[in-house]
Image (cartoon, rainbow, N blue to C red; front, side, top):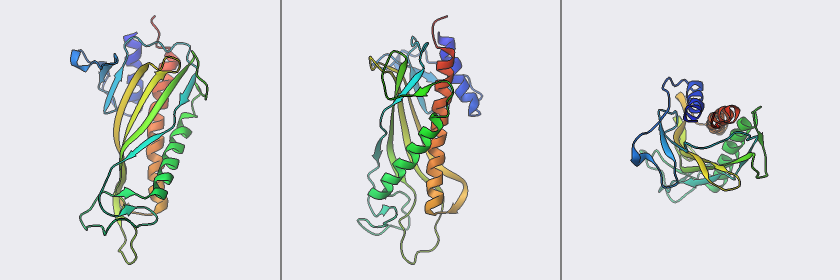
Amino acid sequence: MKTKILAALAAVSIAAGCSSTPEFSTDPEDVTHDGLTRVNRTIMDAVWARKDIDLSGVTGVRFKSLGVEYRNVDGPYSGRAGVGTGRARSSQTEFQLDAATRALFEEEISGAFMEEIRRSTVFEVTDESGPNVVDVHIGLLDVVSRVPPDTVGRSRIFIDRVGEATLVLEIRDSISNTVLVRAVNRRAAQNFTAQESTPPRNRAEVRRLGRRWGQILRDGLEKMIGDGMSTP
């Protein structure tokens, strides 16, 4: 059983170019209050999983709505309106998103994420619970923009990253609501070199981030479900 779980996590690591083999921690302090054990050497910042989970027979994945929390930053809002509580400082690198841009961000990143998930040929995305369905709960925490608000007369703006967010996801049994896997990952939407900030380019970077997270989750789910993760 343990071998299959680690093999699934290793498959995700290899797909992402990581050469380390994941392994369960042997430290008693790395066991959570709900019975999850920390898994080391994964491409995610932190992963916990149940050692006794059984995903044999799972054919469907049900996704809960995307929950988003934004970092509280003083100063003007970053977004299409470019208005806020004050003037941006020349040294300021973090900005809140205005309401319209928040809605656009959530639409773009969730759309790209689900587009990657639906590419699976191993499981189906469903709206129903059942013994053959697992739930995936997704949250984005501490979202912050690195894009300054548009200002009339301002010089062209070049940035090397659009923003940052922490992805928190849980895989749960769809009937008992028992948590099977929990993962956390902080990732910046960034370019390899500084590029001029434009709305189309910024949206493309957000979509790229959503696709990357979606690919990681899809690959992991396909390997876990494909191998069954059941006791031999």
